[in-house]
Length: 561
Ligand SMILES: Cc1cc2nc3c(=O)[nH]c(=O)nc-3n(C[C@H](O)[C@H](O)[C@H](O)COP(=O)(O)OP(=O)(O)OC[C@H]3O[C@@H](n4cnc5c(N)ncnc54)[C@H](O)[C@@H]3O)c2cc1C
Image 1 (cartoon, rainbow, N blue to C red):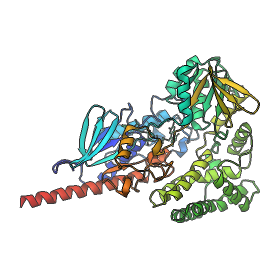
Image 2: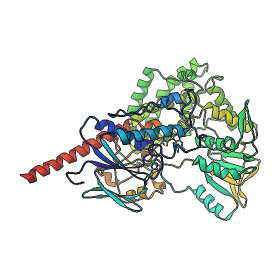
Image 3: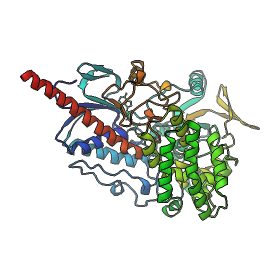
Image 4: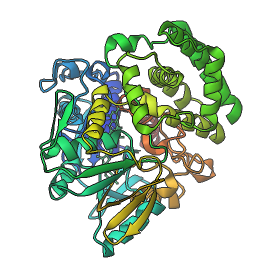
């Protein structure tokens, strides 16, 4: 441990929104004590607090997937905090139904970080703009290594790295090799500003996008409005600088379904208090059950509320239909969507606008969205078997096509791009892909389309075995980190303490966020970054550090005798 007379010291690796949320929770909890912590923050990003996904310099065409009215990131409560509510942030438009650019939320997070730096009396922050490559546990505490220097010792280390680099999957690996010796160009979706610069040379080309999720909607805005095109009177007007055709595709060909268009429509999907209580109880039970039973228990809690909402909104389907839908969904998520990608998009828009009674999937998805906090609070603090955890995570991920839906405006713009023949969904549903000299050939049932640019808009998996991050690789090799099970993230306790191989908990190294998926659920949300997990972590650190300091005092007292 650090020397007896040293102040408590911690290192935080990664200062995106989750590192910020953790630090704010620590400052708030320390407000009840007379402790002062030295905190070293390791992150090479320019805008601390915002991280790469909410970078204030990011293109304003990259939008949040939640409307302003639903952004619930309460300012911190530490003594001396001065930052305003996000709703009062100057660059935000007044309309609560709009989905603001992520960069605006990033500006706000950066301001919150500065507020902490200036006003949190219990924290003494130092910025270390470096990437951490290794962490060592020695007799005197934790040591951090960057490419150039060694820092420490620390009482505690927190890893909030978001989604660090992963090994390319088999397909991406093949394409990376392919573009070395051929004419095709392979590009990442982000940063949007880099994509926009590269896209200046793509006028008239055919372009494919791997992935048909929220990132693809950002990419489409960049390749159209970013290049001078505009939407006007329900039509897309080309600028002439955009690609000839854009061909997004995915494993099932379906775009995410937009959320209800406004607050009034959205409240129609609210669960009642009793329904939420039943969901909480079902989830608690499910966390102790085997994988099959757990998923049945949780999905049964959706049946009555979904049937009630369907009835209230003019869809005559009954509880039995909902139950059957959920059975199929559990077995093969998304397999019941039988419309073509474009038809499904139009149906989704009509349901989001309230022009068509919602389908079972739409209702279940909105309920699931509204229960995300309840899901986190029931799952994240429970002891769950790896199989059950995996089943619940898979169910949650499957419903994301509804629960993480885009603004209806984005879905309508996609339709306008299809009508203007800029976007073509003809090969959207898992096409065969040939590698050719000019780039790629997408092969669907009756067409072959050559594209010279491929954009990767697929979010990599948080599975530990796919990591290419040197720090995570080293911690795994040393046994400090172990996976919940294949395909999931790190094992961690409810307060973030990592559980290593041999079930040991190396005291003082914690992880929060996506990389511990399976120990936590529904981590890909800004709300989770400021949720209960950060308070649990802060409480744990304070207790452990306090205990160590008391022990040091005991030793001092004894040696004084
Ligand atoms: C493209 C995209 C769009 C999203 N949009 C939304 C949205 O609209 N709404 C929503 O609720 N959620 C959204 N999310 C989910 C989003 O990831 C989280 O809400 C949030 O960004 C996660 O914050 P984080 O701090 O955990 O990770 P990040 O924001 O990724 O921050 C991690 C930080 O760790 C640093 N780091 C990593 N490794 C090291 C190392 N070895 N040494 C030092 N520093 C390191 C990185 O530089 C980075 O700054 C989006 C995610 C992505 C990828």
